[in-house]
Image (cartoon, rainbow, N blue to C red; front, side):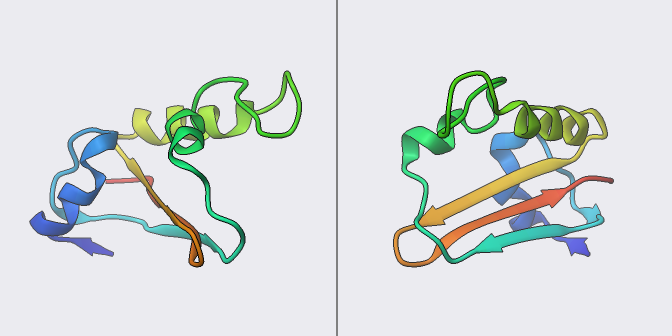
Length: 90
């Protein structure tokens, strides 16, 4: 996927993303949305909405993606579900 300058700003919270060609992965659901507090913590090690001591998966994904100069963007809205976009490789 080609990311243009205007689209690259969407991923700014994950670090600087330069315009260019990227592998693009999108995961989408139509369930309940995540509240802002959950979104802010979802990449923290061991964070879980289920039970204590789990939740290392998203922290590991974020670490790997960022180590390859990629980025992650999350949108979650009531009635629309959640979309997670990943640009793993520049």
